[in-house]
Amino acid sequence: MDPRIETINRITACLQDRLEGRKPVLGIVLGSGLGSLADSIRQPVVIPYRELPGFPVSTAAGHKGNFIIGELGGKTVIAMQGRIHYYEGYGMDKVVLPIRVMIGVGIRSLIVSNAAGGIGYHLHIGDLMVIRDHINLLPNPLIGPNFDEYGPRFPDMTRPYDPALIRLAFQVAEEEGITLQKGVYLGGTGPSYETPAEYKFFRTIGADAVGMSTIPEVIVARHAGIPVFGISVITNEAHDNYAEDYQNDGEDVIAAANAAAEKMTRLIEKMIREMK
Image (cartoon, rainbow, N blue to C red; front, side, top):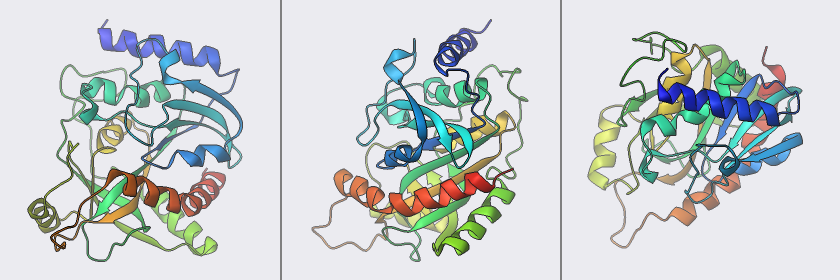
């Protein structure tokens, strides 16, 4: 057996032993500064990543590094309170390991969130952008021997983000009085922020927002046939027309994400309640 599969199976079994009989139907990945959504999960079981054998530990600011299992929107969910990034020095197999483990415990849908820079001139700090498509500049996590247990060698990526879940998001947003944007997310390696010339290039090739995560998780979920909903909190305006003394600041990014957490929590909780 592929040693990567053995690692996934070992961690999955360990996690199942800690679930207290619960069977999560939905996985949620909470990005930079967005871990507070986990506070809305009722009857939570908290499992730190460090307590799972062979599981990578999140080192990024704003990522607590826990699985939270409990009830949200009337369903049993498993949430990642902090993700694993390629820029932390982990191989791509480790970056997507949490998603494969969540698939192993039985999730049937996945919600991914992130903090992103708004490339599109229509995007501003605090906006919520529903991801309709993406551009991947990270290594593809499916490179190497295919995991036939999970999906085909050449998975289709025509609709990486589920159209029905996108429609549901806009329906819920209208009911809740929340304004949503929609756009294309570009994922790069980081950890340096992009240059003004790169922002201009990304906009030219069709990106609306840029970040350092998410896409590998989506690819692995779609490989396994799991429908995905993705949303970005716009935490800075990447418009390439900065003043000479402007600087991107990681603390500002987390603060902007925290400020948007309340409306994102309302949106996602009601979406989950109405998901089939």
